[in-house]
Each structure stands twice: as C-alpha cells, then as structure tokens.
Image (cartoon, rainbow, N blue to C red):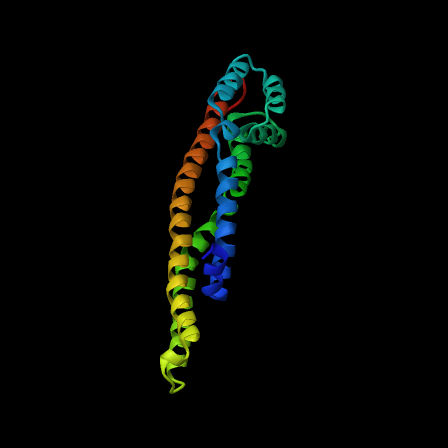
Length: 207
C-alpha cells in the first residue's frame, strides 16, 4: 500500500493534513534559509563599522553597508537616512522603529506554523469522530457488519489514520516552531545589541 492510498483512506481530513504538512515544511525551509546569523548581523561586519565610526566616517559606514547586503546593514542605512541631525539618541530612535519592521518580516509565517501545530491534532480528532460515525452508520443499518466489510473497514481506517496523521503533522511542526522561535529571539537580541554598539560609537556627535 503506497502513501497516496493510505492518505485516500483517511478521507478528506487526510488531504487537509497533507496540505498543512506541505505548508509547514515550506515555512520551516524558508526560515532555516532566512534566519542565518551571517545574513542578519555578522559580528565581523559590525566590528568593521565600529572602526569606521571611530574616525567619525558615517559616510564610509553607509557605503560599507551598501556594499555588504545583510539585514543589519539595511536597518543602519535607513536609520541614518531618517534621523536628520546625527546623534546617539536620534539614531537609536530611528534604529528601533526600522528594526521593528524588519523583525516583523522575519517573524512572517511563524504564527501560521504555530497554528498548524495546534490545529493538526484537532483535525485528526475530527477525522476520528467522522470515522466513528461511518462505523456506527454501518452498524445501524441492521445488517451484519460482515455484510458491509468495505464500509466498516473504511470507517475504521479513517478513524485511526487521521489521528496518526494529525500527530505526524503536529509534533514536528511544534518542535520546529520552538527551535525557530529560539533562533529568532537570539537574532533579535543580536540586532538590538548591534544598534546599541553603533550608537555608542557615534563619537564626536551630540548625545
């Protein structure tokens, strides 16, 4: 029995769970690619920017950020473009606003992944209930269950398989969500620390 026949025996709930598993996998793959420290706030690049700022070369920092495409560089460029008078306070305020928008983009899909982890076992339970309804429907016909073995088998399969599928989708999704959320929290902290480091090295400017 191949995978498709197993899914088909689980009824329409099985197809819904299959779709949710594909969506969850796509989110996880996308987040693994996006949430890499080397693409967010590489420490070596931040040290280079601090060196440039030590000579009060804000323009050089902006040019460096333009040449090196990572998330923190995008935030810094936009922050310097929107602060007006360069100062530690103005930079931190602009950095915070822009960083919040960028972080929201990084978090995109996480809510959906958490929802899939929550909903999948409930859909499995729903499939189990529907399967039981089919079983009782066969028994309520007044004929022997042996007279309707295919219908009885279909109901039993739907009742059991949907619960299994629901857990198969939910457990990895829940684990992936927690691991990715921990990674995201660390990257958010790295972004915040980078902003403070840059602000603290705006020497020669008003605070």
